[in-house]
Amino acid sequence: MELKDYTEANRRSWNQVASRHHDGKQQRKQQFRNKGYSVLDDTVTEKLKLYHIEGKHVAQLCCNDGMETLSLKNLGAATCTGFDISDNAVEEAIKLAELAKIDCQFVRSDVYDIPEEYNGKFDLIYISAGSLIWFPDLALLFKTVNRLLKEGGVVLIYDIHPVLFMLDEKDKDQPLRLRYSYFIDEPRIYNEGLDYVNKQEYESEPYYVFDPTLSQILTAILKSGLHLDLFEEYDHDISALYEHLKQQEVKVPHSYILAARHSKVFG
Ligand SMILES: C[S@@+](CC[C@H](N)C(=O)[O-])C[C@H]1O[C@@H](n2cnc3c(N)ncnc32)[C@H](O)[C@@H]1O
Image 1 (cartoon, protein in one colour):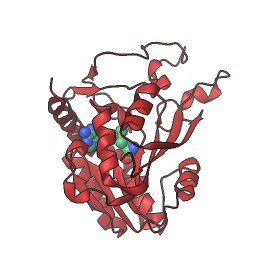
Image 2 (cartoon, rainbow, N blue to C red):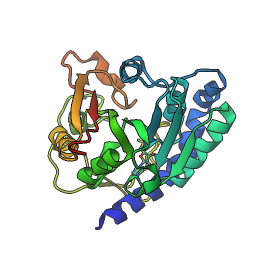
Image 3 (cartoon, rainbow, N blue to C red):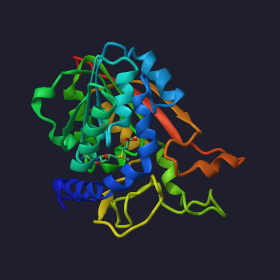
């Protein structure tokens, strides 16, 4: 399959789940009526402040229904633009921004195809939980990130730790049993839906995930010319799928934050 076959299949599947997610998130969405509301946790909020989000031009890649993008704006960003491949998720994001009366722009686009008019426009690009697994070509993803960043701009990634994908989140009896390989040569194909909000399975269009290893992520970032600035691993869950691991004595990495900076010399 070609790169576009994967991303278009994934678009169809993300379109299918949007209304289910919307129903499950109604209450949280209403909270955006409260001035300054944010869904971002303390860990990432602290880092966003460390990178001086206030007054900056910020983009979120894979923004889904925009809850995090609106939160970035509420943290003081000058402008916020969310990009996502799903037509229905972007429609939800636009509706939510209107409800909340928060000025953010949402653009429906495959990240790989973000128009050139956005080149060099952003001080900060934010990529969050469950985003990197969707990219068949990580090198091209970070090349895109690099072209969207201003000189000296930063990409901040707050994602699920790849080691966690070795576990079966449904296995509550032996939650730490290693079920899946860390290293995969082919994308994983699923058709059981993407409703991680209501945790309901349904027969969906097939979707493809690429589960990159940590070294694949780091290599793609460094080869794109971005400079690694910060990397921290955490044992807290940001996916709402592995909360039950909290009780385990053995701590496995759950999430990480990585920041990398655009540089003119290598950019
Ligand atoms: C797990 S969700 C991210 C959720 C986000 N962390 C949040 O809480 O809103 C992954 C998102 O990536 C988007 N996506 C997948 N492949 C994409 C691509 N090639 N370009 C743009 N968006 C993509 C999907 O449509 C989906 O909204």
